Structure formats: C-alpha cells, structure tokens
Amino acid sequence: MLSRAHRGASAQVRGSIAPRMRLSRGLLLLLLAAYCAWSLLYIQRTSFEVGGERVYTLWDDAMISMRYARNLADGRSFTWNGDAERVQGFTNPAPTLAMALLHLAPLSPTRVSGVFQLAMLGMLLACIALVHRLAGLCFGADTPVPIAASLLVAACGPLAVWGLQGSDVAPQTLVLLAALAAIVARDVREEAWPRRAFYLLAAGIWIRPDTTVYLLAALAAALAMAPNRLACALHGLAGAAVAWGALVALGLGYYGEALPNTWYLKATGSPRALVWASGFDQLLFLLRALWPVVAACALGGLLLLRRERWFWLLACVLGATVAYHVQVGGDWLPEQGSRYLVPLFPLVALLYAGVAWRTAVWLSTRVPPVVGAVAFAIALLVGLWRISPPAPRSEWLSASAPTLMRDYNERLYRYGTYFREHSDADTVIALHWAGLTAYFADRPAVDMLGRSDRHIAHLEVQGFAPGHSKWDWDYLVYERRPDVILGADRGLESHPGFLASYQPARAEQVLTFFLRSDSVAKIRDPALVYPDAPAR
Image 1 (tube, rainbow, N blue to C red):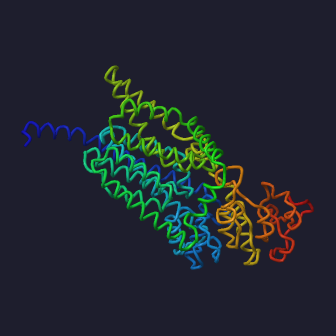
Image 2 (image 1 turned 90 degrees about the vertical axis):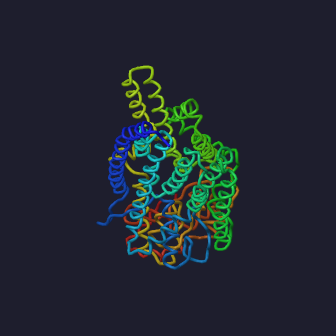
C-alpha cells in the first residue's frame, strides 16, 4: 500500500494535471464546433442553384455509387442500369448500402447527397476527436500535443475536401484511427492488444477492400511487438477471412466475378512499369508539397520516438499504405492528394505535433523556456500551412475558392435533367463522366471508360492513367450503339463509325452532345439545334 505521503504526492500531481486536461478538452469542443460550422459552409459552397432549386451533389465517382444505391432502394436491382446487366462498378459496398438506406427516406434526389455529406461531416468530427485521444495516449493528455494535432487535422485540406465530397476517405480514416486508438490504449499500459481492433479493421474492408493494407500492417506490428501476438494473428486473419469471404460471395453470387469490376479496370491490363512510375511520381509530388512536415516526422520520429512501440505501429501503417499507393499507380487527381494516402494525414499530424513538442521540451532544458514555447508555436504554424498540398489547402481554408468540380457538376446535372425531361425512357446515353448525369437523367447508360462495363474493364492496353486508361470505340459505336454520346475525345472524334452515325446537337444554347442519326425521334425537344459543323 502507498504511504500517506505517496498518496498525497499522487493527488497533488493529479491536481496539477487535471486543469490542463480540462483545458485541452474544452479547446477540442471549440475546435469541433468551429470545424462543423466551416464544413457546413463548405457543403453549401459545393451546392448550386438551378431553376430556383438548391442542388446538392457528391463528386462524380460517388454519384455512380448513388445510382447503384437508388436502383437497389427502388427494387430494380443492385446494378448501374437497374437491369439484368450485373456489373459491380463500385468498390465501397458499405457506403453504397448506406446510400440505399437514404433513398428509402422521403428525400428528393437533389437533397440525398446533402444528407450524405452531413454524415461524412459527423465522421470527420469523430476523426478529430480520435486524434485528440490518440495523441493524449502517445504524448500525454496534459501536454499541448492533443489539441495541436487536432488543429492540424482540422486544417488538413485533403481530408476535409475528399471527405465532404462524399468519397470513402472519412469512414476509412475513422475505422483506422479507432483501431489504432484501441491498440495504443492497451499498449501504453503494457496489456494485451485488443482483438476488437483487428475485427474493426476487417469490417473496414467493406468500406473499401484496400483497408486490408491497414489490417496487414497492424498484424505485422502485432507479430513483432504485441504480448498476445498469436491471438492477434488469429483474430485478424479470421476477421479478414469473413470480410473477404462475404465480398467474394457478393461478387460471384450476384455479379458473376469474384472482385469488383473497378479492380479489373484499374489494377489489370496496363504495363506494371507505367503503373509504378505513375504511383512514384505522384508520391514525389506530394513529398515536395509536404516536405517540412514529412521530414520532421521521419527524422524527429527516429531520434525522439524510436523507443515507443506505438511509433513502430504507426510506421508500419504509413509504410504499407505508401507502398500500396505506388503499387496501384496513384490516384486520379494527385494535386488534391491521393485518396489512398489521405487517411494517413491524421497520423502525420499526430507525429508532427508530438515531435515538435518533444523538441520544444528538449530546447527548454538548454535555453529559456520561452524559446522552446516560441519554437513550438512556429512549428505549429508551419504545420498548419504545409499539412496540405496547395490545391486542397486553398479550397478548404478559403471561403471564396472554387470547390472540387463544382462548375462541372452543375453542367452534368443540367445534362441529366435535360435528358430526363426531353428523352424517351429507353434512350441510351454514353458517358465519360458516369456519375451525375446518369443519376439525374435516370436513363440507361453506357460507361465509356469502363467502371460499369465488363468488356472495357478487362481490356489490355499499352498506356496508364489512374482509372482512365481504357476505352474501345469500335465496341461503343458498333456494339453498344448508344442513342446519345456526351463528349467525344480520346480519338472518338475521328472514329469513322462515329462520324458516319452521329451528328452534333445543341440544347438550351449551351448543352452539346452527339445524337445517333436514327435516334433523333427519341429526343423530344422542338428547340434542339443541329449545327452544320462536323462532329468533333
């Protein structure tokens, strides 16, 4: 038993720590409130008004999942066109099923996306709170690190932009942080690592299958460091087997292929050298944008944190995810931050804030403490600016900056409503951007770049551009024969069959498309104009 003197000293220490912890929690609540208000403003900035109606949309890929979700909710089928052509053009089954639930609510199509954005906002708020907890476990809840790390995450443009645009970044990051917080909470007490963390990561595979990378990284760390390494391995592998078994069962049982069509589209058919070169180039671009933060985390982590087991757990996740990003060739919009890498940004923020604080404490033992405090403040300001690449930083932190694809989304929405109002129900529309227009038009569609087309996804090609490497104009023009083609590029504009069968048309003065000559009657618009210029 502790002596009275020891009990008194412990109480005194707790008494000195408690006010700092209360202050940190109070600042966190203020930060969350400010983040919520700023995010609501951002959501409003992504919307637009057409014909007196406010329209909320997600980014185009997420609207592909929305179309699958609506078809399922309407009882048609869990397909893109709501028909017998079963192709799994989504890689996010859990978010897509959540979207289907939203479509059961009495919401108009122009409002569903806004509600989904609010759900993503809730997840982002939870991510900030989890970073605060994780930083407290790693560096002490009574230090400035938890609130500093939370502030860095709140300022992180890629996380906010991709999250509020409706990508899978928010739920995937939430699952990763929750699992890591559960493990670190046990590890700092030198207790057995919790099996629920591995089951949580396994469940995240249904958010995106590449959550498997986080699970494997955590398993590798557990095998090296966990006191209950065998139990961790068994539970982690069991969770992965169940999650992947269910995914494969869905694929084979309903769609006829073990993996999503998007996997064949993006991960097969291109020379591996080109894929890896693309992934590596995108990584270098990101490192050039974030180099002060990344350098501080790498060097400071090795010098100041290498004795902490949780540091090596985070390093395993970081290293595995970066390697995966290179392996798949990166993402479609590298200037916005690869979605494969964005869930790592909160971990980088945590490490950066912790290294800055440990460095400030070390300085304070050699110089006046005020110098250490100033150094920490300067480091935090640098981190707030360099935690994001320029494009998403500007989009997120400036209330006047344009949001991701907003103007293009409005144009695609106008196409969708035009075809819904002016075309026959069986009019087939071929699309490069397969999300918004298809969702709002509610017409049969052809995905010209193959996300929801099995033939295109399985092509072998000689080039590589993430998600946009494959097309087949002979197949489009002679086999699919869509009534309408929205946009002609990548060589389609000079294809003989296209030039012979399609003519340019213009609606509402600004909406241009190409109409098959024998499908003119399907467009019921007396004001439709057919320019004399050749199709191009």
